[in-house]
Length: 304
Image (tube, rainbow, N blue to C red; front, side):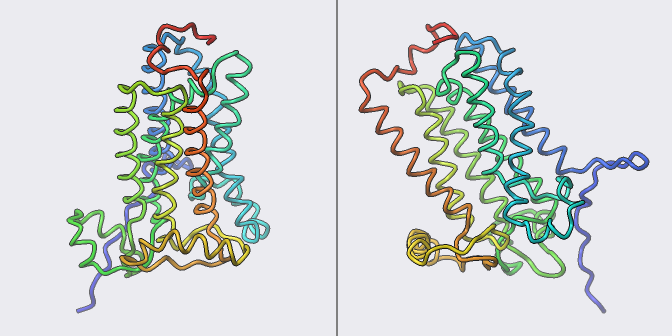
């Protein structure tokens, strides 16, 4: 008797005539709304008009989507040069989170400068919402059966005590793969709890935002090494050796994911920069005697 491969989850959640609503868009939209909700609550607590957050999101969200797509298309230009009609097909996946963060940070910085607000203060407010949104957004990759790692056995997934519906969604054309979307989602959820907890500590302004940068980048660096769809480029051999040496602790447990298109995983390099930048900025804020304590922020005016 021929074994049947279970059907994957349909990426289309709802069809209304020619209009198709994809689970990917629903999940990404939900993550953005929840992140905005958390940010506006914290803004109220810190005596900032929540309407400013709403106005900022009008600029930040489109900038994040455009940045995420352009970043991905840039590193996959050989494909999109031949298939230009797919450049705007974001419902098929292909949103690079680092590009989205770059686009969001640029738009956010310009907004807060225009309204004479503190970028670091706003960063502390929105950081927990961002990382929670990332934790939720990874499930869009799960639905699309993308952003996974290398081949594993079904027994490997069963030993993780995963539900059958999740295991079977990682069965792509008869082969099971590392659920790297899940690893990153859990890592980001823990990061969200960490950032919420840090709000109760007397940190200097910006340190919650910098902690987000370090935490997310640290997890992404190691999880990226398991993936088989990493954006890559051909870089210097010494840089490749540094990245391989840093990933070595994972090498004792798992085989790295197949890498094509170069020898440097872009996300690993950006993550390394994020870790170093976050650490340097925290040290700098600690050395800077004029840096304001976060505990006093609720007493400040919104123009501080």
